[in-house]
Length: 290
Image (cartoon, rainbow, N blue to C red; front, top):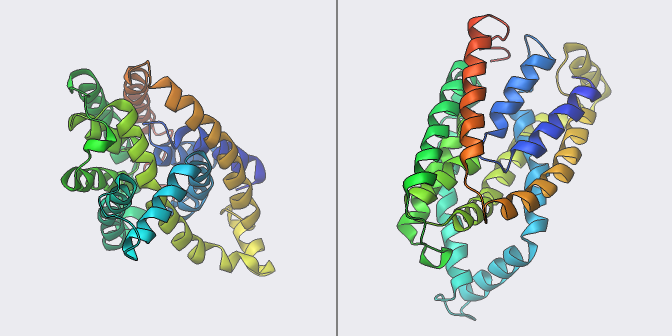
């Protein structure tokens, strides 16, 4: 992977992470097109997501710091557990458990088998259609103040499905939220807050595996010669993903105030079908790098 590839993949990550279209699927597909026979890999994907999640931290900084501060004060007995921010802190923790447990249990499959592009194409189409149904027929009346612990777990299970490229972390959680009757804004807001601990834990875990070996000159040369992500490529892609990701959050949160998710539904189905055609024609290897 050269720096140009890293720049392109960073742009792709920033553009797709917060939209319900699956950033991991796009990195997997674009990576294969840029580097035939190879792909960025699950570790590269997880580390670069740290850039976009840093954008979430900055965008929701006041909310996140307020929630954390009140949660710790309540834990120490200096604040009421009934405070909405304390409750939200518990809901984020509970909602993060499914993806943490399933991510560790199925790590090998996530890094290999589940990255098959036939699975990715199927998930793009299936969950695109589910998003369309939820957006069109769900009542969408609940605000985040109505969020229950049961609903938080369901949100968490939906987020865990995003371990499969093509599902989409935001798409899965937003779809679940809509089906449970939450508004577009409420479902998206909780989806973004819920992603923070999961993505940072996953990204840092993968970074500890992937980055230290690249700190030696010999391993850097070996990675470059093999076409694998170098430390410079990872850093560049992460920084670009952060800048573009922040702009996308601002745009997306304004968009859903007045527009439906139909454009994303159509996009997912079109991309999924196009991917199936490319796979059938042999243009893309469904198992590259797996």
